[in-house]
Amino acid sequence: MKLSTILPYGDDPIRNADAVTEMERAGLDMVWAAEAYSFDAVSLLGYLAARTERLEIGSAILPIYSRTPALTAMTAAGLDALSGGRFTLGLGASGPQVIEGFHGVPYDKPVGRTREIIEICRRVWRREEKLTNEGLYPIPLPEGSGTGLGKPLKIINHPRRPDIPVWVAALGEKNLEMTAELANGWLPHVVLPEKIQDVFGPSLRAGYARRAPELGPLQITGGGICALEEEMFAPARQAARGLYALYIGGMGARGRNFYNTVFAKQGYPDAAKAVQDLYLDGKKEEAMAALPEDFIDKVTLIGPEGHVRERIAALRENGITHLHVNPMTASGETSEMFSKLKSWIS
Image (cartoon, rainbow, N blue to C red; front, top):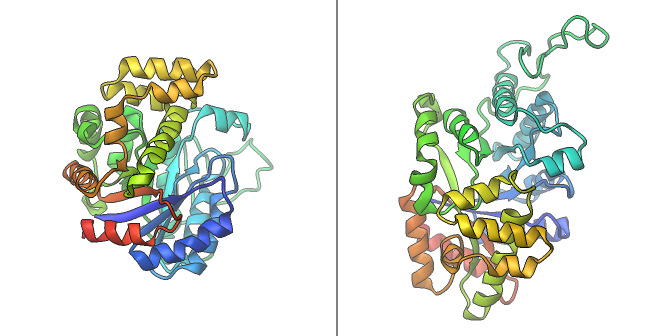
């Protein structure tokens, strides 16, 4: 099991990136950079590539709608070269609020688009032939579109690796099935490890049935907000309530919130409705309080050593390969926490 974390995207990026060097020395294996409607992730990842030595760096996630497939492939190849082969391309569809509201692009065919982007990226990295594609992304533009001057091209540089790892943030059944078939890893959210097989098992098995052997086992992140000091238990649980109330209650409209649907499927249908109704009515504190205690227990790593180690064991037993933590400490220093967690999972 590897140890990973994600950088907050609303804070000072230089301060956050500088802190990663200490995390690397403490045993952190992988750091992810998010891209919502904040600073772009690529700039930060390039800075991280220069500031770190062995740490794997990944995007979690680059939205599939905001770049062309070829640019996504070029960006991944560039970051992989700058980091010495330490980059992982994390992709996701994001949601209609961000894609249509911020980028001004229609949110359509997320599964088909993700599939084609993965396939195009891998063809670009292999450099076996000039790039062409038919489907949602016609490359080059067909006759009658544009100027008619487009021609197939091959990336100029030789990518450091022709098989840069691709992870997908997937929650929907068809998207997860595609992830299990094509991707190297899965970035879940609002997922309880004990519910993975019951809720997601059918989609995972359907994808595995078509998975190429050379991809190896699907890698999966799992964990959550982590606090190991008693004085931090209450504030960490409150922070977790704020985070999950935002996603379950506020990320989308009624009837169109993927996180809310997944929360309900994992055994909390009544709470899912209550949290969403309260949040969308502007009652955020009440929405946070409506999240069940046992959900917060299972979706975080907050508590004394015995409890946290039990949660790590549950994650491992249910196929989690990367222990993913969002650290909270009284001092703000995370090196001791990461060293301890690394010793527990080694």
